[in-house]
Length: 440
Ligand code: PHE
Image (tube, rainbow, N blue to C red; front, side, top):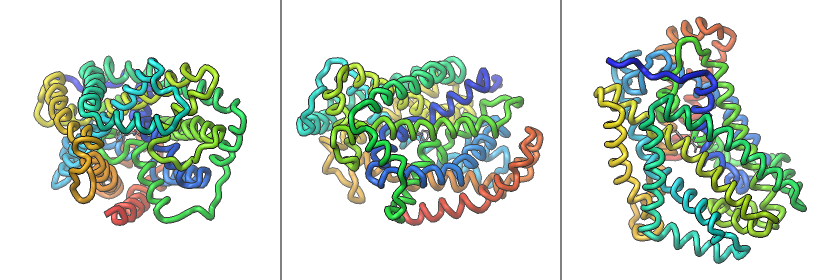
């Protein structure tokens, strides 16, 4: 058997795992969901979710992979057996579904990067931009073409392997992503009235709290930390024995949260500066932002930077959606990496077609009242991810706790043990069950 791949360094692990976490969730979804949910108050609740259960769950999943040195299914089997490997298989199906619709939005980002280079989207006319967006996502040829281009980039990186593919790419793209964020924020904050957006984003109005918002915040916290679908288990399995997981986990979560905050500070002040409704919804990125850039001095430059940032964020995450499936085939069936990656490429490509066609040809093809894209998003993000997170927490908090305790003690982290166990064994399962039942 070949030796298991390892991250080259602790910083490599941190950048790759935060690359997984920071993605469309932070850059695309967080600003519009915060915009729809009262700004500051949503930020606080999101932060509370990350602090109360998110960080511990990242550590729990990383620890599973780290102890077993295997991806989810094999790890669950080797550490405990019984029915547990099914938790791993569930996670493989979950990342497979997420990847199939994630690469569609990745494709949109790629298309908009190209359109900002050609200047096609630089107009103030939001109606025209809306039409452009809708006709683009409804066009079967273009959406499938861009989806497959994005998927091919993801495949090429994963084919390179853990160190030479994923780690190397993250080491370049993650710093670049944060630099681009800061550059755009600097521009946005110097716009007139930008301060109103900043105030909206940092001043909590607690009267706006409601049940749906709490659920939304917990779901987004899990999604934006890549919890519940085996990604962090796979990434943890490439951590060498010397690396201390709690410290690394803290960094990963910190960067993920920082990205959300910075994305909010990039989008919301711009929205306020141009007098646009912050609750514009999912179109904020593809319809509102181009209109804003078209009115800024040097707007084209910032539009290109913005969509480049989006592509970088999306690709380091899609890589982390593909890797656990590749690792599953490698660990369970000893398939060789390239072969595994090719076969999954083909399968995901097929699955992504209905997702890519959901806004055109298949728009009226509804199952449970949802088009294929929405159905895949709903099933994976609202049902399977929470279930996967719940199982991982129970596994660590109950099934293998003595071994986890031993491993963390060996890493010199005895102080966190009581809190960590309480979160894994009780708090996270309760919170996730509530969210899960509500979603069903
Ligand atoms: N965290 C990624 C994002 O916010 C999505 C993701 C979820 C990646 C689960 C891997 C696993 O876009």
